[in-house]
Image (cartoon, rainbow, N blue to C red; front, side):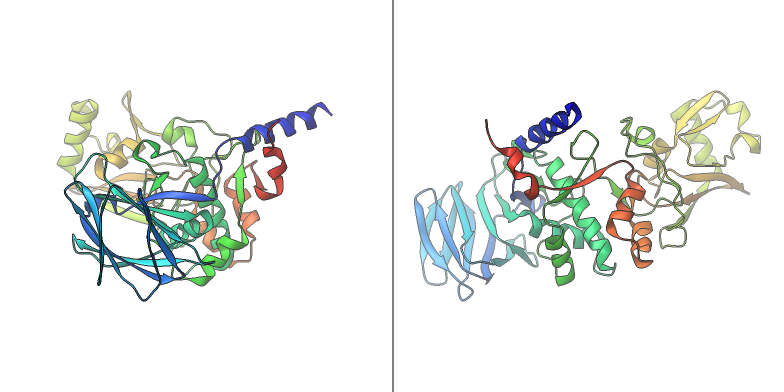
Length: 388
């Protein structure tokens, strides 16, 4: 009974924390936009400013918004609505989507769903665009941006759950900038509305499902392209020891696109790197045995002659695909023969895709890569959010 009471208390505390069905995603921020075109693609929109409602538009109308004299000017083909500090373009139909095309700088047409907020950037002389979007629509966009349209449907469901968990875990990542997350890879790649209806369906079919650890906290749902046969321990890469991010043997990814790679480096450049960057004893570098290194399993350090160099450091310094590689000599070149692509912690995407093609369920795949975690449905546990 005490264990059940503790579990209920943990669930209550968890669901008292921030959870939003709508996310604010900063989009196109690095483009320094000063003018763009907005036009509805689906549904109906109402334009609001700090002065209230100014217009209702559908897919027959186009609006131009520009940065001018520290304000936002709003114009249609027929009317100049004036200048404002903040604009909210809110979709009021059941489904709403819009197209956006930047004029300055000149850009391509991008489709987004739900709502758009615009304000003068707080630190720069251009417009800040925020896509206020239903979390499932956002998740669908992320899944397509991260993995494309070719994997099987079961994999899309898995990736949707992972992306949703990541988003809610990092919902305050850009809070000081006025939005939840950005559209860049360091949050999650997001390129707007997905073209694949199957991906949209996968996000909807897994709606509200997230991954939690044994203490009912959202997990750090990391993923990468290919592990080369073995994933990495979280503490070996980020010095953060998470029980569910442990190294696992993975044979599913071994024959996929990113399973192997190689890089040729002039021997002199490699020797100079070891000496100048890591104080490797120069007198030992004439011996081939002191240069070559072979990882039996995924290892943490290149370790010789009392010198320890983290493989993740070498990966960063030489812009390598992964930190899992062997070092060998070929005449005047050092050959780095590597396995995998990415940091190696968590879910191996190409391995997971292969498992999905072989008929594994998204639950089976998830528990293969994240050990000892649980999937829960947020909506089914809403009663735990009740205030006392």
